[in-house]
Image (cartoon, rainbow, N blue to C red):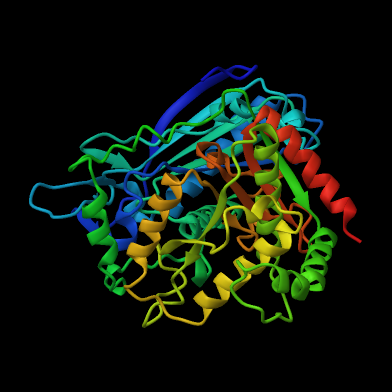
Amino acid sequence: MGSPNYSIKVHEHCRITPPVPSVTHSSSLPLTSFDLLWLKFHPAESIFFYSFPTPNTDDYSSYFFDKVVPKLKTSLSLTLQHFLPLTGNIVWPHDSEIPIVKYTPGDEGISLVIAESDADFNHLLDNSSPHEAIESRSFVPHVESSDSIASLISVQVTLIQNGGFCIAFSTHHAFVDGISAVMFIKAWGCISHQVVVGQEESPSLVPELVPFFDRDVIKDTTGRDLFFKYNKEGRSLKILSIFQPKVENSARATFELTCTDIEKLKKMVLFKWDKVVAEEESIITSSKPLYLSSFVVASAYVSVCIAKAIQGVDKDKQKFAFSFMEDCRGRSEPPIPGNYFGNCVWGHFVDSNPMDYTKEDGVIIVAKNIHSKIKILNNKRIREEGYEDVMSKLWALSGDGVNIIAVMGSNRFGMYDIDYGWGRPSKVEMTSVDKGLVFSISDSKGGKGGAEIGLVLNNRVMELFSTFFHAGLLCID
């Protein structure tokens, strides 16, 4: 896989446990229908880069090890008392039909690596040009998985000598979806901030950051049936080997869509809406909306730029599809609490012609179809029918040579608001986009309604993507 052009030194590898509770007997949670579908999937990985609040400090090492690390360890322990299941592991007892999460309060914890890197901090923060995709890998911790056991979360905190540090997370997708991961990261940030300012004795969480673990709210069983139908690995818990980082001859980059860019895209799509509907048979609906979300236009624009860049390098790749994740918490009956901790997402394919993505009006066509799909989902509750259809479409598209472009994250997560006590992040990266043809979307560092796009592409494809991305925005009136 190659290696980055900097060195990294591990100072400590420990396990952080919550404060010893009054009850220490083992507990367990079953994996739900939503969880099981992700059992063999790769972990979700993210890195939060923080600049030191005193940029001219002569000795960053002392500041980091004396000030930062102890506070992070203390606050992580205090946070875990609210997230006890995260301290356990996924196991598959012989007397259980499905895997479970088993944890023993006071006896287990989560992996924490403390490291130091001689990487150039300013280079890592620089979004003006793509970086080698491998560069981020040394900052990301490993989530253990074997045939018999799998850990749920790992954390690595790395000092970067000339200006800051980063906190990186790997979370097992069979227990943590994106919303839950952000909930935990925000909860730790909230408590850490209180510890840093001296409120270590009684740090508290706002209600939306207090996790809800009751699995009885998940009524659907269709996902369980699908898991047993498609699981070819028996009772193994090991993550599939196909989910290795694809970083050879690849570049990683972050692109920004400013609020102005997004508003221009919205106006362009709405202006051309009726014309494209009349010309394209693949359009699902002709009803012109009064409003388009930032997610819709950003996803359409990026996926079309990716498709055109790939086809520009490989003329044989002409078919594309787009998929996104739907949060099902508010669409079940009865609704699942917004602070439910676990998987509660389902993937959907946008109904469009695989050739639409490289057409001249591709952005308008794809935006219209994404909007139409979301409108359909907003007008119905989650039902058991349809799950099999999604899986069947996945196999059919793959078998037909269609390149599936997926998006992860959300521009509504508020990633740049997460302050551990030393200021807001200087950069946030969703590292696991290097596991496939995936791009991430998050809120923008500058706020004000913008969005950041993260992706990893073949070097030649990345060059073309950058050209299409910037040129396309300049062409919008």
